[in-house]
Length: 154
Image (tube, rainbow, N blue to C red; front, side, top):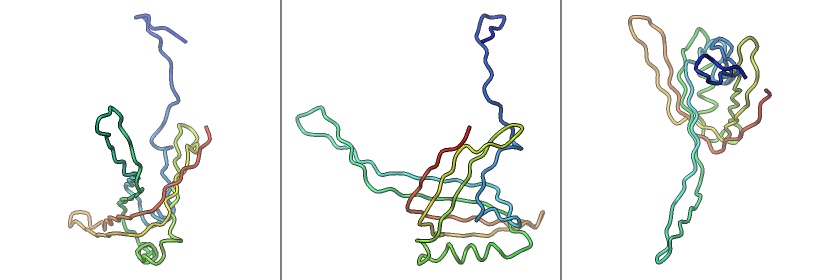
């Protein structure tokens, strides 16, 4: 490891480039819908309890729940309507699955893992347009029951 003029160790980590970083969500990022942002949140309810007359602390794990928020731009096809119909029907939850590939790199994109949300249903959808650019924006909020993770290569 090289040292600089201040006798500090300087080592380079793996570089990343924004143009080689990908968040692949096929169902939300179809070619005619430009996925602008996506947030996935998964949480478990934890209750902390104390025992009278003791210094012990107990933690009880409750149920899990998840939510996905996505912003995308509507293009020249109506694929977003089919997505809303499929994922908006609570009766389809058992087969509504979103897989998200996490990829990053510098000169070549490498898979860093995958997460899969299952039991998805759209909770809300909204559309907006601004007169200055006439771009149709869609905000989708989904609830999901389970989040699974898969490892990625290096």
